[in-house]
Amino acid sequence: MLDASGSVAHLVSCRYAWGVALTVVALAMTDYIDRQIVVSTFPYLKRAWGLSDTALGALVTTVSVTIAVFALPAARLADRWGRVRTIAAMGSAWSLAALACAVSGNYAQLFAARSLLGVGEAGYGPAGAALLSGYFPQRLRATVLSVFQAAGPLGSVLGVVLGGVMAGQFGWRVTLGAFGVPGLLLALVFLKVRDYRTATVSCAGGAGTAGSGAASGTDSDAASDAASDAGEGLTGHRASSGRPDLAATVRGLFRSRTAVWCYLSGALNLVVLSTLYTWLPSYLGRAYGLSSAQAGMKAALFILAGFLGVIVFGHLADRCAAVRPRHRLMVPAVLAAGAWGLLFTAFGVLGPGGGQYALIVVAGLPMAAALGTAPAAVIDVVHPSVRATAVGMAALVQNLFGLAVGPLLTGLLSDAFGLRTALAVMPLFCLAAAAAFRLGSRSYEKDLAAVSGGGPEPIPPGTHERELST
Image (tube, rainbow, N blue to C red; front, side, top):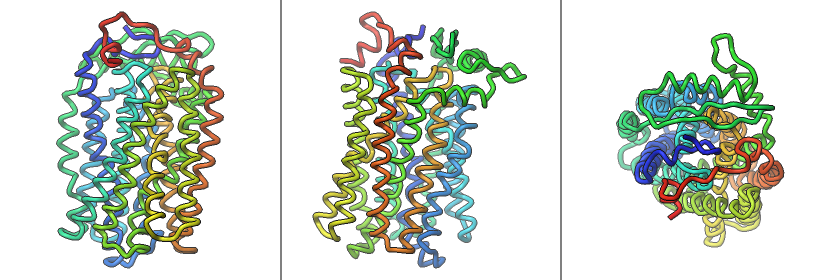
């Protein structure tokens, strides 16, 4: 039933598959709105509670830290319990945490509510990526996951823009809780989406081959049994309960050099991206003398450029990979290096003005390119039964060493040397990301062949894959 890449695309219509994708994206947008909207309230929180830049940056960092801590257990839950149920539960949890932010009485309570926001968001990305990867063929995987990841920039845009306007009109409390109810409703609606059974696996020497699966909303027990078999095939170990041992599964994931380099490169890239998403509105307000709403609108252009870049360059990576698979990772490597050049020139050479702002906006295009290509490459080189766990591992590494580092480190550098200097230094992480992507491309083709024999098996004409290609 599954092709060699673990796709069940031939079991569902093109319309249904894209309907699921749009549902996942819509819920993801509320995720990033709730995560990012706080940056527009920084000036109000600073005045109300006398907070330092380090304390403000910590409100963003704590979300990333809690995501990192809970990402792997939540992803494991998605592989065992089901992707749809995990998504609905996580969406409900972060929406309730967003409502709690609105009623915080002091900084400690707001910090705690923001931390709970991260707990809810921990499993959504892995579960969503695993669900979508099964509904689409391998050759479109980077494109589809780029559309999914584009919800990040788009939700961040809405969070920054709407947050800046709403904070001035209604206050920071209403702003922080405004999207909790829509997120909760979307999470419950998501229970209507059909899940599919996890593939079984038979493996020799650590390389797995897909067995069977079907779209179903009531196969959670079968999914758990299949995941157990798959975990044993991947790692060669089982827990005493008969389910795959988590530690052994994680060791199996790290056997892929491609996956390891993708974890690292994604984290390094997100250090810079999270820095700009968090601090660009504040920089524009301080350096250009803009109001909170005006700074949010101008920062939104940078984030919108990222929204466009993640889709366009994700599709470009798929097209280049059709010529040679390793190009899927060479595309973000080149773009990361280009982003460093643009951002260093903007903050390290130019002063506030039209030229600096133009370079910042243009840099948004390549900065977000890795959002879809990195998880797509990770999914390509692991067995379908542990996709959510693999993406959860990526979320752990990328949040703990990427998203958590950027806002807090920038706040520390800003308090010591000024915000402009901090923003000139941080793009150095782009160069490190480019090097990591380059190293990952060297092993990608070998790891891909070990899992799927080099790519998906042909599917007869008239199937979902053909519909998508047209």
